[in-house]
Structure formats: structure tokens, C-alpha cells
Length: 117
Image: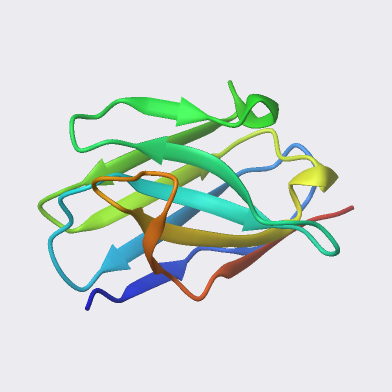
């Protein structure tokens, strides 16, 4: 059983930046990802990083968000720049299933990001 703990959320003005961190309790040998869920909306996949470092992003965050991982620290990060009010959501760290990346094996509890003036 792997536990994921997110940190780094908070209140930021539009145009500002935040860096989310996620620490895993053990080594991860599959894709890691960040999802988000805005109030009244379904959870959506924001960014994914494979074990080999291949990156993918939700179209609306391309060019603004950067996902990275540190395998030595069992950690994944999400650098968020040029934040917009529509980025407001609870952000979840996740470990995707090795055989089926559409499935998630482990979820963190989430960290709230609020973008508001």
C-alpha cells in the first residue's frame, strides 16, 4: 500500500504561481499524475509523467504547468504558472496502474488551489 501526501496548495492571485509537491511512502514504478476537481465538476487529468520522463498535459494547462518527478525522493511535482481563476480546484496526486494508465492505483487526499483576486 502506497500513501501519497500532497502539499503546496493555497490562495493565489490570477497570474501568480504555485508549486505542488507529492511525497510517496514508497518507490513508484509506474506513471505518476496530477488530477483536479473543481466545484460541481468531474475530476480531470491535468498532467502525467511516465517512468521514462514522457510528459502529457491537459490542453488548457499546456505552456503554463510543468510536471516533474524525483524518483530518488519518491516525489512528483506540479509547477503552475500564470494561474487563472478556472484553475481553482482540489488537486490530487495519483499513481496510475502500470498495465492500464486509465486506472489509478493510489490517490492522495488532495490540496486546494484557489485562484482569486
